[in-house]
Image 1 (cartoon, rainbow, N blue to C red):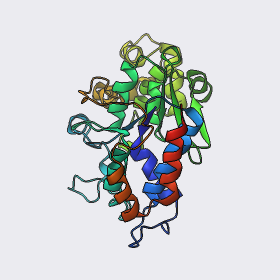
Image 2: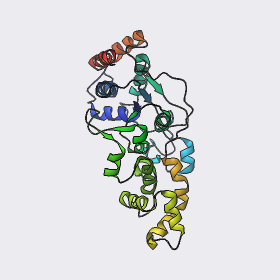
Image 3: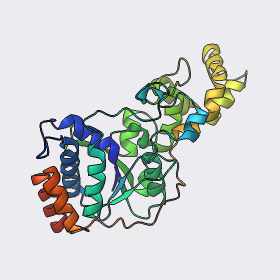
Length: 300
């Protein structure tokens, strides 16, 4: 099981009231909410291994070099490089990291890469079935029934989640996992600063993929004056060529991230109980941590 950790703690932050606080009054709603999420995921899916994948670089320069608008709107202010994070969430992130480390849950972030890239590398090199837990549709591109890669997509918390398989993708979007990235490149994504191709939304992108097979074939059709593309669609695709030259590299998750050595085995007991006890007292983690520890001790 691979956790898109930031996606989950953002959901926890907005889903759990800020009135959930440490003894000193500091909000810990994201910390406790994430622990509750992990408890429920382990109870429902009983993974043998679990990795918390982190954004060591949420806006990698190599993606920005290709598409300068990539995630620009998420910057705190023009000219800054830090992602805008709610004031009450930002101080909770180090606590989350410390708690995961004390528990012994593998936590991986690699400089120059997003959590999506770590997930992509782990998912494509795994020799056992993989479930990716994320609220980010970009990772639908990794869904692969033949390799047993599925996405658990929370609807209202992780207890109410869609399990995304290739059949689900075909039913909802009309594309397979591998085709999803081509569709996303054509469609664009304002939430990631990806403009897409003028006049091509999700339905049109899917239609083109169904008709021509993939993005390369669609572009070849646009360059062929004898193809059946309408003049307007041909014009938009040709004018969008500079964007389409680089978009696939930006949209597709990396699958060759140099990962550090790590042990993904789901722990049955804390790796560092003394540190965990100190964190529990300092931050008032209470029943959220107790439930997770009980679940880890009894899960196999």
